Each structure stands twice: as structure tokens, then as C-alpha cells.
Image (cartoon, rainbow, N blue to C red):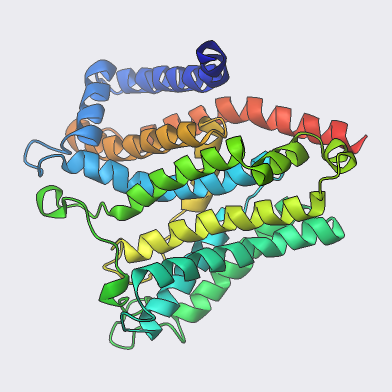
Length: 356
């Protein structure tokens, strides 16, 4: 079993090593020792971002940046398992984040505005938004790639409308909402020591990783979703409601992303307010993390932390060695190109065989 798992992750490991090697060649051309540079990147990402930075500040920052990537990658993975290609995690994160923000700004009391209810609202928001694509796919056969891309476009513009209108903080000149109710905010983890916003959202992400793993390994619903993803026609002949599975898979994927969107707001990324840039490109990057993690929940956890570590280490690379941070972006892109070329080829070949 161990050898089988190692073989499964081997392409990802090779892709990382090749990308790091190419990155090292670029560093040499800049007069930088790549071995020392990579060691310093590791220290910055998993210990301290600089000698004068807070104790374990680098590790806390890496885990904080990895948190939304875990949620968005799981959103991509759940859809993958059902044979669907979810490009809409970005819009689904925004949907969850906006839903959580609206609720936590509107209900400023511990009865309706407590953290548990706000989390449920975010999950429902993400589920319903992704469910639109699932419904269109299962009911009318609309390609989920096109549907989720269009839904991303709609949600981004809806976000801009809300932040410049109903949700806008009248006391601020920035494009942002009011700060959410204190009772809806995530508790930070060792923030006084690390001076970072690492919060319980990371623990929730780990619990979700375990939950998704158990869901697909032991539950009947998870088994049926995988059966649909493996061969839709065979699953249908076996009595599985394939349309229902597609809808639920997209909905659960959206719920994962929606929870990730809520974490960015409730976790204090932008001082507990929703801003127009708070979601960055986490939803799209999550696709890359899912591919790197081979659509395995625990692989995704490791891939997300690694991806975030490259970001944190890249900042140090620029400060200490005066090397363009774009080198890190090149490394990230190369890793995904090498991994995705294998995964996407297999995915589209399987879809083509299914259509015959």
C-alpha cells in the first residue's frame, strides 16, 4: 500500500524537484548560491521570516496563507471525484465570504451572530452558489467548466456592487465592509508570540481534510460519487442517481470553498472586514494545489503548506538576495505545468472515452 501511494505521488515529487532545479539555475545566473537560498527560504517559511522577526512567525505565516488554499483545493478535489471540473472555487469563496460578512455585520448579537451560525451561513452560501452549476449540469447537461467560469464572473461583479453599496462601510474611504461582530471572529493561535493572524480556521481546515477523507473512504454517498466519476454510465446501470450525485458533489465542493471564504474574513485577514482584494486568487490557486496533491485530502494539506511556504520564502529571497520574487512564481508555475500535464491528460481522455 505504501509503495502504491508513493507511486501515486511520484509525479508530483519529480515535478517539484525539476522546478526547484530550474529555479536554482536561474539563481546561479543571478550570482546566488541556490543551496543557501533554498535553505534560507525554508527557515523563513518554517521558523522566522528574519533574524529579528517574532519566534515562529514564519511558520505561523505559512500556515495562515495555506489555510484558504486547503479549502479551495478540497473544493476542486470533491468535484474531481465525481468527474467534474470545478473552476468556480473563486466565486464560491466569495459567495461564502460575502454571506458570512452580511450575516455577521447585520446580526450583532451572540444569539444570531455567533460564530457557529455565521459558519453555517457561509457553508450554505457556497453550497447554493456551486449548486447552480451542479443543477445546470445534471438537469440540462451544461458544461460545468463554462458554468463555473461564468458564475465566477457574476460573483466578482456582485461583490463589487455590494462593497460599493449595501455592504460598504460608511466610515471608510476604502472599498470594504464594516468589521464583523466580535462574537463571529475566529480565535487566533499564539498571535501574541508570532504576530501573525493564524487562527482556528487552520484547525477547521485540518478537520475538513480528515472529514473529506473519511467521507470518500467509508460513506455510501462518497462511494457513489466516486463511482459516477469513474464511469457515469456504469454507475447509472448500478442504480446510482448520477444527476443527484453531480449536484451534491458541486454543492459540497462549494460548501468547502464557502467555508474558506469565511475564514479570510472572520480570521482577520483584513482587520475583520471584507475588502475587494481579500480573496486574492485563492480559488484558482486551489486548483493547482489539488493537482499537486493528486486529489488526495492529505496530499492537498501538504501541497498547500508547500505552496504557501514558497510564497513566504520568496519574500525573504527578494529582501536578502535582491532576487526578483518572480523566480518563486516561475517555480510554482513549472510545478503545476509538470503535474497538470499528466492529470489533465488523464481527465480529458477519460471524459472522451465516456462520451463514446
